Length: 204
Image 1 (tube, rainbow, N blue to C red):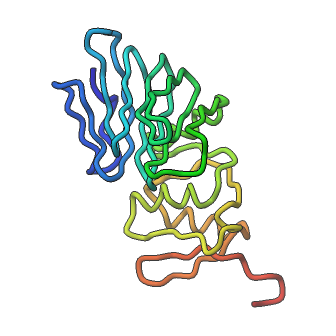
Image 2 (image 1 turned 60 degrees about the vertical axis):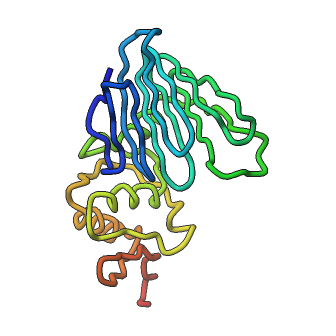
Image 3 (image 1 turned 30 degrees about the horizontal axis):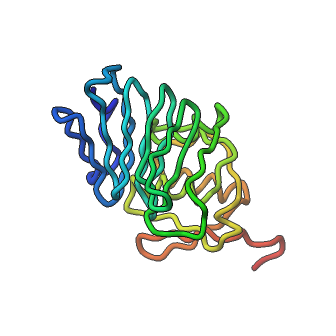
């Protein structure tokens, strides 16, 4: 009854002895829980709890929301601010709960295709295989591991879909590949690289 590996961020702390894990401020961690109804495993993040028994799941706490993705078994997620009732999610499903009140009626369970599950768990690999993933999401993954922060210059650039396998250890190679393929041009300012639209043929 323990996380399957270390959480990705220093703020993610697991306390296996108490069968409780807490993600403080932000973080993401996978958990594999042995089946024992008398001793459920609970993940706490931002006031939201993920209660698991005999489950493999991934919990992500970032950008004002808690997201749970289940790959095996079932988990109960709650309380959600919108209805204060725990929501049950099963294998190949994902639930994102905002931490501030919204106009939405409540959290919705999203059913995931196998490719979407692989993408959600890809951060656990140092050479993840991205499939039709927004550039902004890939840039954020690289930025977690490097001093150089990749920032999409505009929503259209950030929404550009990218597929491929990229080593998270080498951000410079990733940027060079995007520039070579005419997907972006990188404008650097200190520790920030703004991913701009490429120059058009014939100059600026």
